[in-house]
Amino acid sequence: MSFFEEKNPEMDRYLETHASSEPEILKKLRRETFQKTTQPHMISGYQQGRLLTMISQMLQPKNVLEIGTFTGYATLCLTTGLAKDGKITTLDVNEDLAYLPRKYFQESEYSNQINFKLQDAKEFLRETDEVFDLVFIDADKENYAEYFRLIKPRTKSGSVVLFDNVLWYGKVLEENPKQRSTQVIKELNDLIAKDDDFENLILPLRDGVNFLRRK
Image 1 (tube, rainbow, N blue to C red):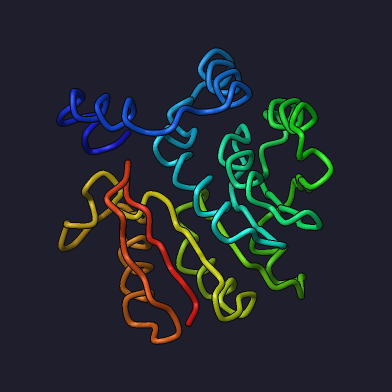
Image 2 (cartoon, rainbow, N blue to C red):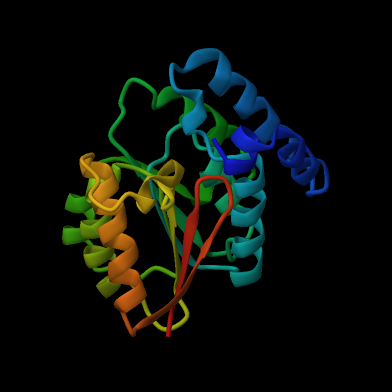
């Protein structure tokens, strides 16, 4: 849930009605996500989806990595800017829900460019030698700091990395958080801010997106 969605729903509706509309396949996927999953709020927000789409279209990446597929909404947003010979690898560990993203990936015009893997992201990052132009992380918050450490060697100058939920519903303002996920997200934001190899900005979009670019 976004800050505006909770604190000022009228502003949230204003922001959505003044953003580009989502394609029909995303509307269908959003509806089915809310009908068939127990935690539909985990789907990327409407505004966030438009942001991912625009970033992908501006970068026209050849190699994209997504950690945390869920039902595939963000994946489909990220595919829209892929280079003709580009691909996206999207990782998740939820076998029970895998049928849903697979269904929509097959319907997508980018189906041949999507590599959906049921695999632990840390394992994948330790095994791969690929370098990514664009990375989006939205899963397993307690491993965010470790993901950053593992992803850094898999980037190059100009690579863009996005971490979702980095404001954690405002919990990052807690001085001594008891929740492990809050502690790790604060650690991540500190690591990024101190890393001279990246320039970054936390966008107060939905629950906060840390937007990084490798120098």
